Image (cartoon, rainbow, N blue to C red; front, top):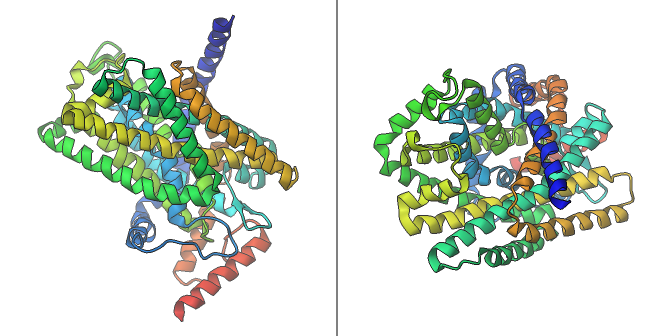
Length: 508
């Protein structure tokens, strides 16, 4: 009976997943990115230097300083902490295991289409952030909330669709807590078995799951402020560690780099039918795997990372939007590219099998280059990538729950949010020993379902994105125009006064 139920759920999910991650949605994702790129006049190219100069560069310069918020009007996080929370949700196991999976199932050419999705995704993510900050809401305590469901409900004015986006986000968040913990427990138990020959891996996995659940509970109880501070510490460390190890591994096989790039570009346009060419993949499958994996990795178009960006204390939507451009660039063009080159230079692509286990091959990638030390580093990197994703998505789910029950009193809403957090924590521990791949497939489906209403809204509000963008850069040039800081007149005036006060204080 139970097996029949699971089989039925799996069949329904497979059908839905094929639709959600099928060609219509893939084309919608790419088409939205192209439309936004045209309407913003290739912003990701024109303002890429500005993006770096106004986001990550000053953030690194201020790392040595204490980054305590002095904002008394908004209870949010600094722009860098908002970015760190967002990037922690996107830079996860998908950047290692997911990229390896894309190459195994779509061939080396999938990497090229991952880059294409990221190029246009930079503007998609930028647009999400701009709209997220423009339509975010502030409560009487100064807490700010935003996300795709807010600009769908208050920008597009389709509240029912905003509600659907929020519900999809809740289920995606719950699923994310499970799948990421599953990867953490699997990586740690695999290393323990390798070094100690302990055969009962489920006990190790359960212990790992409980530890992760407890640490997560301590962090998420502190809200977005604590999440932002933790991720702003962990993200630079884990990213730098991975980048260093990848560069060393690639350098060890430097002679294979030209071949790897040649394969990526050659197989990106592989018109051979299945059974021909490297691993025998069709042109259509190469594109689909690359595009889908790219979106799953950088989340541009899903409407998830914008929830974290909307908590930024910055008043300027475009300023936080520029963080979105760097976020996708860092996630895909740096992290995913390093994973791809490490994998393709370490192994002979002709010997790879589509049926190979992506997790096992990811660990083998480190083991082949660094031995047991590499396995140890992998055991640190993968859990960190997964853990930061867990705490970021807990916040996404929390904000989606608040949106769904916004009509209730503040007290009742708090009880429901607390209930969500409890369920989230419990599932972290429980899912650590789950062997079924069904939970992965269901979460993948809900991630895709989040994208559909978000992309529809981005297309409909693309003109507004262009208008807000022009407004900001016109003001930067000294042109006198009324600032577009918020969709709500009262909040817009408040933010306008805050910016003027900040400008005057900086002159003193």
